[in-house]
Image (cartoon, rainbow, N blue to C red; front, side, top):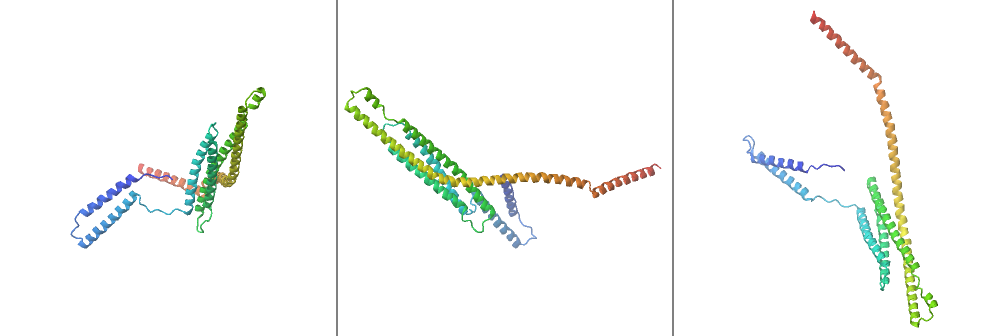
Length: 319
């Protein structure tokens, strides 16, 4: 909404009024005015001035009356807060995924898998809470609600739904990329080529064979852990798909409204063009109407009579 900054002009006018009131109070009253009226005028002026000063001070200090928030504003704030938490947790999840996919020689993979599992569950719970809070914005309308207020609620809900849909799509993309990376690592983590060494060299000791068995068992354990991680990721993606479908329905409704707006705008343009044509036709008809012709005829007759009158008096003056 456009506005103008009139603060300086307001302060100039206010200082001018204050100077005038001080001048009126400092001047002596005329002898014809009774003292009672003078005291009444001075008292009312001082009360009015104090009231104006208190009002202006409250406006300058910002102590205006606070209107109560509508009921749905609490759910809107809660949804915004949940989306902010989702942003932070998703960024942290990406960092944990990157650290988990690095090649390590310690035993921190189990701890990282546990952290990823816990964080994935927290993100899924936040998505469900966001969905429930989002649905509460447009339910339980009061009986005396206006159409404009209802439309505002629906528009806010669709805007937040679009934002949550983008975030859920990004979360699913993160999970799919991590799952594909785990599968790729599992395919590349074949056991060491110790069997070929045993076939080519028959003089290996028993210690080498025990080491090869230990490596094989460790590799099997790593493969099983990655399979469990992939299953957990797939489950979280399935759980998230339900939320994604609900949000998609809200966004589809929003797209339907946008299509209706486009249709209405096209209809407005068509009607404006037809209205302009009718306006041009009416203007042309008005110019060619009988009353307009009569006015033109009268103007011509008046001009002719004026010319005759001028010529008549001009001949009289010459004579």
